[in-house]
Image (cartoon, rainbow, N blue to C red; front, top):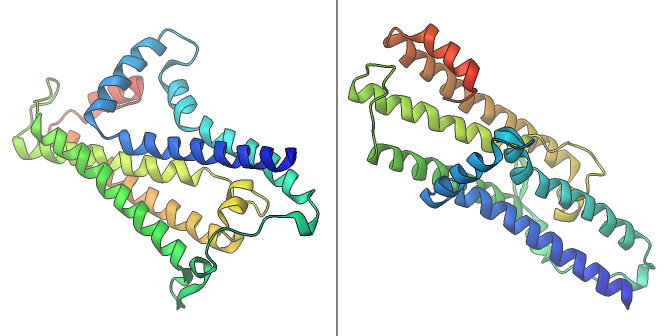
Length: 236
């Protein structure tokens, strides 16, 4: 009885942490998050975390916590007798193959839904950021740019956010015994496929981000100065 309660608590805790992590990414493109995040950056600037440490703590620690809790959960589940293990609550139909193709492989309805939600999230992130940027277009003091150049620079900058999202998922290690994949029910072969797709998408978005930014800097004849400034700040 005590073990069943502990398993239920661990499962609820993992759901809460994962939902909170997803909520962070959904709120990140909003104006409210930007305003609060700048305040958090200013507070962390004089601490051991600094800017990059704060990013790591907020966006990476939940996944580390999920992995640790997942290891404990799976360890407790495997020690249970086969008869006492709870039945799977997820509908079997979600894991059945829906698309079988030589190009995309075998896709279940759950995988299709996850891919659709991820693409929807990318679209939401880009739209929220770029719409706010276009509403508050301000000329850059160090660059004398036309209106279309300023807009194009904003578009290029926001492609970096899409690469960042892909990178966050790309850093998940691809292991057969990874607790997160076991809990979600993703097979090892499928995780390799998604890892490759995420890596390709990240390179694509990062290439557009970098090449377009360098193009605008080159058009303004300040490419060397801007590259030195970017190297010192680490941000555009």
